[in-house]
Length: 166
Image 1 (cartoon, one colour):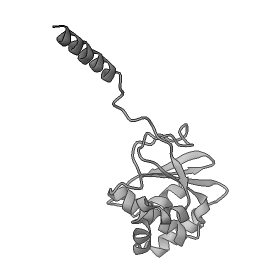
Image 2 (cartoon, helix red, strand yellow; image 1 turned 90 degrees about the vertical axis):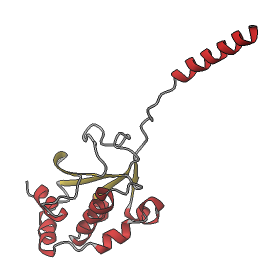
Image 3 (cartoon, one colour; image 1 turned 45 degrees about the horizontal axis):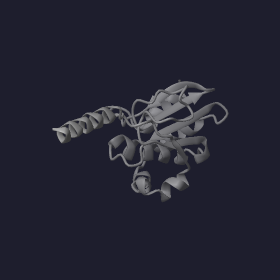
Image 4 (cartoon, helix red, strand yellow; image 1 turned 30 degrees about the vertical axis):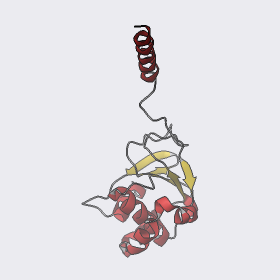
């Protein structure tokens, strides 16, 4: 009987200990990356192909170029590298292609790699990220647009132009 009592005590103790474990994953940290780092990161193996295969509307790209003001505008991209969703593997590289074609230096875009939308990032107080990828465009530190999907009605370059001309 004593063996069963000891075993029962052990099982109860183990159950209590396991009930203290958290089932939620703690927030990770966003990692800022350059385009050069993305090109060598295995999680972004799809990036170069998707970026080079997209041909944006040249007329709209010119309008984006003419509307972008480096002194006023800031761009922040938060993306999950290993996500195979359309937003990540289409929106993000298309956005970067448009910026490249518009002559906007890659250094004008802050790119953060995140595993989850709840990960900590430098703009936590400024942006509430509910979906990855999320692209935020600000003017003088005021949010003017969030782009986080490939729209069925507007091209990515049209979404960018609309944001810049608000």
